[in-house]
Image 1 (cartoon, rainbow over the protein chains, first blue to last red):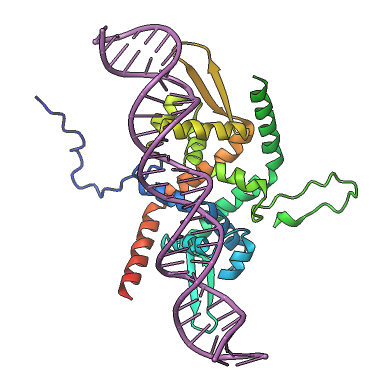
Image 2: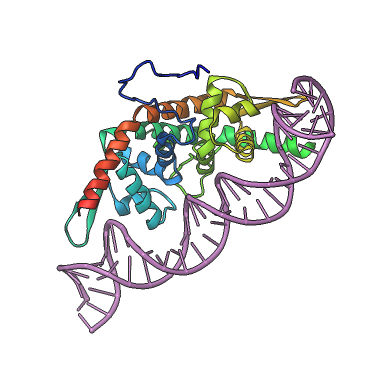
Length: 137
Length: 137
DNA sequence: CCACTAGCTTACTCAAAAGTGGGTACTTAC
DNA sequence: GTAAGTACCCACTTTTGAGTAAGCTAGTGG
């Protein structure tokens, strides 16, 4: 059988596999998960406005626990979105800022956050309509 | 910055409380959570490209279970982002599309998804740097 | 001597998210 | 007659996200 040998055409292609979020095991999934995570969005948006210290971020982002903020910031730092600057002073002082890469994402999630804030009423109205229609059946 | 322009012009404004995602109990948090949820992002992005049927969406979005897709679509429908059109035929046929409101958000999450796909390599490189620096200590 | 500070880490715990496997009702294809 | 497709729902279990509370560092103020 002429077992169709597909993709034997270019033997020395630099394997620039195109990322695709719709593929289950694509690394872009994980990155998107970090960026769009519950606290990731808010941290990025907050840092877009200004460089901030750990406890400043904690105060700005209502409801984050220390644990989750630390965890979130570490993930974002590892992904190259956030820069962490620790000053060896007592008491400790750590400043978080966005990298150029982080600034790009942050602008997008910031816009998303603002958009959401501006359309809360429409969504709330839609929910009422939906719930009413469902209850009527 | 446009967050703080409270209307002080009209004294009898119906107190349109300004939404703030940084406040723990603001409804905008929940909306943002739906939009930025694991499958919410992908569903919105997929629907921006075309109206799709349930099982089409399942095929497009790699790795979603039926349960999660149904759940996600219901949340998005309730929030007024997605329109569900069910045709009473056999076998069942249900088409999902974006509402005008949904199209606005979808454009943003679509851009985010696309951006992520395009910067996977930079993030992966950042992770290696981070991990190497950490292992060295 | 003790508390207090900032920025974490660790352990414990629980609730929510998500996966698994089943069922439904009907039809067409094999 | 049995499987597959269609768009779900329901019950059950596993996995993960996230909160709470504690400990840690090392120096400063009381």
